[in-house]
Length: 337
Image (cartoon, rainbow, N blue to C red; front, side, top):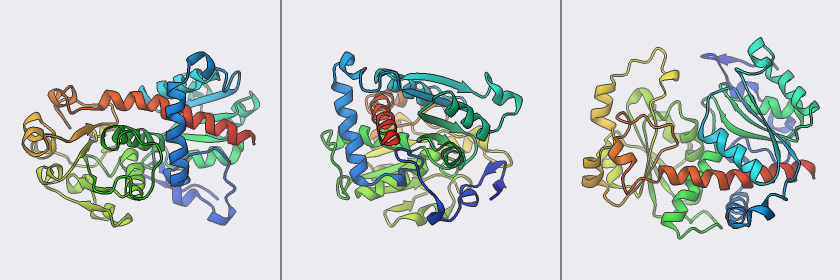
């Protein structure tokens, strides 16, 4: 079935065959919906074990297994943490970017995937500008695919590391979760929610754990329909009112690369939605502050907030390595089963 393009992005729902026709590859995580809460608990528990394990012992888990990192978009945190995670487990990694491979010459994602499999890759970590690309790669290669961010679709490993960061500070670092683990916790996600794959994965995960999620942003970056996917999601346009109710504030950057045709007054945006130390002290003095990166200092938040005592942004990055170790190990173990 041919892919249908929308704004130069693959429409994931247009690409997918009927659900009953899809044969999913064990170990793949393309959407956070691929994981049950038991799966999430197992990943959190395994992440803690691997993080605390002796590095020399840990390096034997995936010794000489082969993992390909296929990145069509620039990345620092996600790419590096996945690479360090795989290498920490003893795996051999190969990094392929669109600027240093046959992709630059016009090679299709399908042919690149087939080539990587022929070269011995046992799992592929993919970041792609098109929503739905990981589904295509999974189907044509038969390999486990870990979605490192696809277009405006999802970024499941980011949602898992965000969850681990929250649990460390709000729930004593528990690793076994259920539908009440975050009951009583309110999380504000603010900024460019319409274009954010990070927001989408968090919106699909956090309400399943009992959290109340407030979405906050201007109309152009947050359509009313965004709150329709869960009764635990709601929209609040008043930023101060939103954060005053929240124990967690997740700021998102304005994605300039996705704003073609959208008129946005950045000064007005900062006036209404920028997280400043004054706003934080007045409305949410005890809330923790998260951001998936990269941060645009002086736009969605100030440097004083980013570097302040309530910021856990660097800690999120650290949690990312542990979570991605657990995901890579799971992909290779289930993929070989």
